[in-house]
Amino acid sequence: MKVLTFYTREFSYTPAVKSLDSAPEVSEGNTIHDAVLALIQVEEDDEDKDLKSREKKLANHLKWVTRKNKSKNIILHSFAHLGESKASQEFSKQILDAAEVRLQNGGYTTHQTPYGYFLDLKIDAPGFSLARVWQSL
Figure: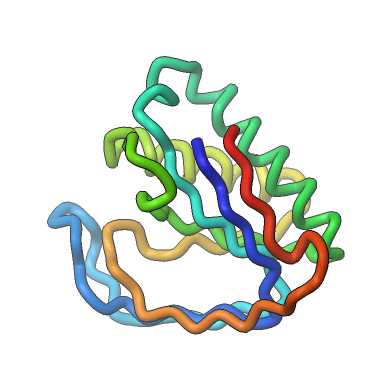
């Protein structure tokens, strides 16, 4: 799994193009303030490991990044462009959903961008140490 995080003062998205036929219809966007945006690529070899261990590793990393940026808000965004290997769409969505539950149970406010859509994005991300973190989990 590859994860690229950005601390954002403001993050906005609007659904642009539906890329997955099975995705539910979404037309509304959202704006989130003071949050860590996590671009997440679940890889093929992640499917060989236990789902629970993968989502726990992801959630723990996101908790660390969010604490370092003094926030309690996390945005989960599937982003299959951080490497060459990709897990199935079903497994990737399961990881995001399970990590979201774990984070919420830990007292974090979470947002998940619409899965199966290309989105128009606006990102206001300041430049300071730990505002951007890349990790291979």
